[in-house]
Length: 156
Image 1 (cartoon, rainbow, N blue to C red):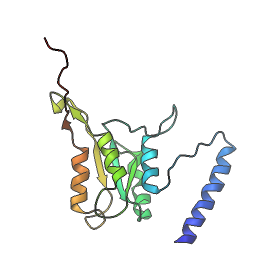
Image 2 (cartoon, one colour):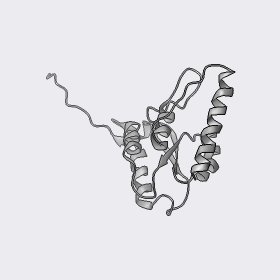
Image 3 (cartoon, helix red, strand yellow):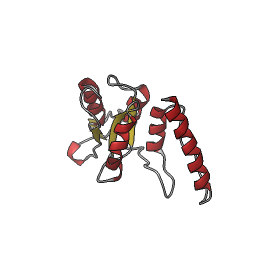
Image 4 (cartoon, rainbow, N blue to C red):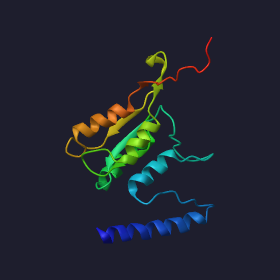
C-alpha cells in the first residue's frame, strides 16, 4: 500500500509539472482525503470547480479506503445531475466534516417544500460498504427541511 501511495504521489508531481507548461496550476486539498473531497466539492473559480456551497446538488458517497469504488463511480460525477464525490472513513458513522458539510448545504423551505430545491445522493457500494444507519443519516441530511424562522424584532 505504501508503494502505491508513493507511486501515486510521484505521478501527481509529474502531472503538476506537465500542467504548469499549459498555465497556472493551483493545488487544492487538505490534510486528509475526506477534507480534500469536501474542499474540492466547495471549490469554484470562473472556469472550473463544482462550487457546491448551497442546496440543490447531487453528491456521490464512497469510502476513502476503497479507491477502486471511487474510480468506478467517477462517471457518475460527470453525467446528469450527479456531482462531486464525498468520502467516508468507514462503513459506520458520518465523519464530522462530511456531516457538517451536508448541514451547510441542506435545503430548506419557509412555505411550500414543493417549491424548494433538493439534494440527491448516490451511495457507492452495498450495506456492508456503507451501513444502512449511515445511509439513513446521509438521506436525512440531504432532505429538505422547514427553515427555522426568527421572530420579528419589530412590533406592529
